Image 1: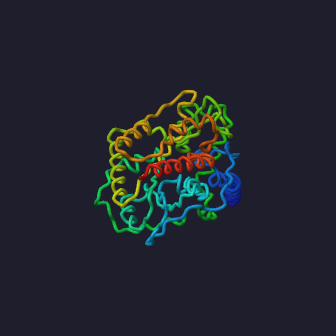
Image 2 (image 1 turned 135 degrees about the vertical axis):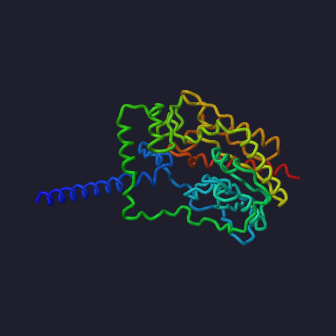
Image 3 (image 1 turned 120 degrees about the horizontal axis):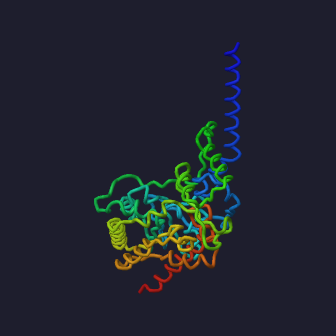
Length: 356
């Protein structure tokens, strides 16, 4: 009889735990994981949930590359999540395509494929004047600084685009049985404690449990939500430690790609989106200065490679425009994407005006 009672109690406790786990996931954690900015998701942080992300364009203004067909457009674009964003209507290229430039976009990421392979496989199908290659600053070393591209990189693999972007994965019935709930609860305990979010020790504990999201105090308000707090990826620090060898590899690869596109009659334009820390670091209460972006621009100028210097523009704009980046995300806000689209459009216009 004693054993039956024990088993009964254990079963009841297990069912209550399972139900609680499920309810926490359904009511809080799932919402956080799907709808919050990437930094909030990494950090299991709901303090930014008031951030508003409305759509402002009804439909895409650009076209997707079609394999095996001639793609006629004035501009071709390729890049990372700033171009391959979940909401295609708010991608950067949607805003400069509005400026009367027909745009064909590759929904392939250079960091997931060997870029020379993709380029060699598709140049015959591209009929554009400008090829815009975009990368976020922190993505340059892993994508372009780890090895030298060469003419022997060509493979016969298909470059079929990833058409599943933006689709929500189905949540299986037992998906709530993971560590997310525990991290969410631990995050709430930290938030309720007296620890400062920008405390070094707290940040180290957070990085152990949650990931790569860091918070630091700014010397003025730059955002609508948590206005004087900079929320950024710990990977942004890595730009401080780029070696001369990595810098040389990045530049040589861009020179290689530039020549390859020149031979195909296209002009390469680099769009390097600066890290959040690079832009706002000098405005922290304890300023952080990162010179990698400026050094890269100097090297690109030496090698006569076209680029849009977003860092200089952003560093001035943040004092006139709040929310250039999303406060709880590593990506640009709608406002930031619109401004960036116009800056790219203006740069293309300047090159077009200079053309003989």
